[in-house]
Amino acid sequence: MIRTTRAALDLAAVTHTGIAGKQNEDRLSVSSYRVSQNDPTLSVFAIVLDGIGGDRAGEVAAEMAVEAISHVMDQPDTRRPLESLENAIQVTSEAIASKGEEDVRRLGMGTTVSWTIIAA
Image (cartoon, rainbow, N blue to C red; front, side, top):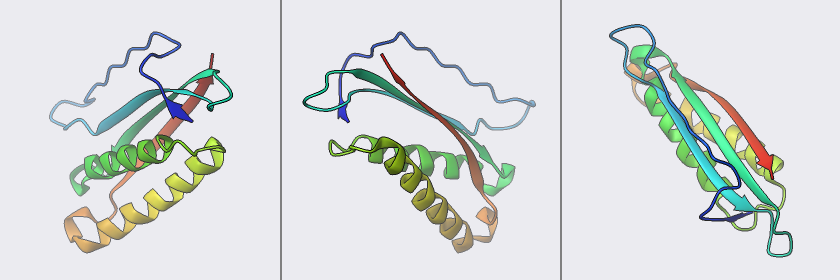
């Protein structure tokens, strides 16, 4: 997929911290792409993550995941976006678990992930 500067859709996003006193562990990324050099079909990739673990660094896990997954999807040779996305999620999950084991305060940190690819 090839990143573009103009999305095929108008998009907006908002997050909410939830229960008073909690920090916001939500992360999101929205990117626009053309399918390939030969296929000008525009698509939008949106990913939403919500860190889990509260005081166990859920926000760290969500940030790690949004950065890693977005980086994979930004690669111009992503010919099979679903396979690339699944691999990125697996690798990121392992990295989050490893990072959590390095510091007892982060043990058990994690994140949810939801994503969509919309072709216009």
